[in-house]
Length: 159
Image (cartoon, rainbow, N blue to C red; front, side, top):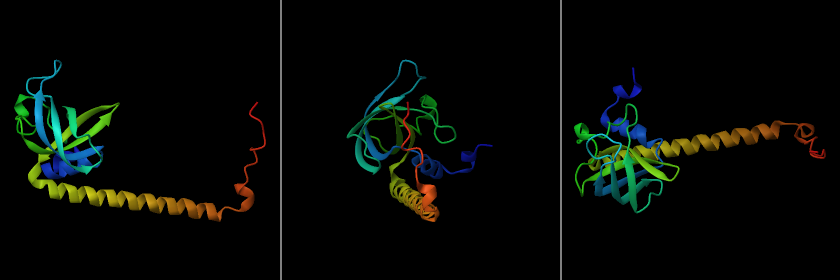
């Protein structure tokens, strides 16, 4: 059973934001079809109105991609999930792969505040965990006796 099947649409989007490079509120400026895609729109140029996570470009030219259990396949049957009209405003989760931006989740702008607060909580928890880990490493280094900290190989040549 897929973990995401148990979640509501809002919680699926929150899960998507946790791995996203960008989460932003955007307005669809242009929709397009790709030659290798199914029927319906598979990409868009989106004007970024507000960054919620990451620093997205002012205009994002992105392809819609499915993410297992989170988002629908971008085709004509899923026009309610993916944007299908100009000037539509949505919250998007996207990732940057080798300079290309892929949008893998879209949600209603009505829930923006909820998504933003969940994302801030997640980011704060992640930062707290990182700092705790750094403290543990620092404490371990203090426990090591001096003779174990000396690099015995530093004077040897690599030749």
